[in-house]
Length: 201
Picture 1: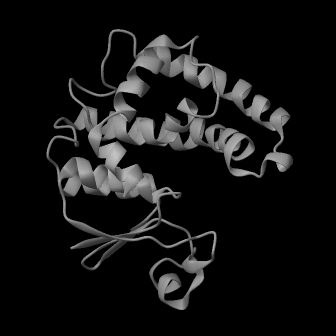
Picture 2: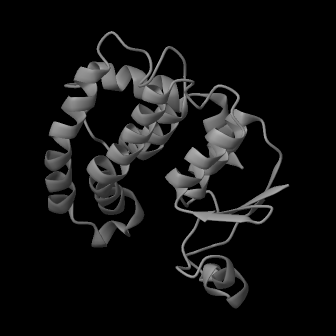
């Protein structure tokens, strides 16, 4: 059985979402990274960075949530992994876009509006991140016009990986009004049962 390390307040939830979509049995070890449970010698032997998540699949050990999801989609494909070479490249393209272009800004917004104690939050930093994110949101919004999915004609790993990076926008008071096609796609994708279960697990 696969093992995924990380609690619901970590990026491990992204991987649990993928596991749920794929219908794979797994064990979740909910390490509390805030309490330092990811710094034990046993865990550092698996992942010397001490970060979560980490996936253990037999002899295979992988870190980085989006890379874990690409691995899972490839190996245990039930429709998440595109069938054509071009679409597989597009799935990887969108995954890299999410990590490089969107996530630095979504993380800053979430930290400053959700995770820091209220008295320590810096709204100016959040607004600056939101402004920097704007052109990225406009880009994906334009791409999603007349499309229900990022790659192909069904929900796939590209949708999952991008949505798990952007989903925090639904709760961090970012105005998605200027991006109606993105808002439509993101709301629908985040409402999938596999995602809801991952957040509750």
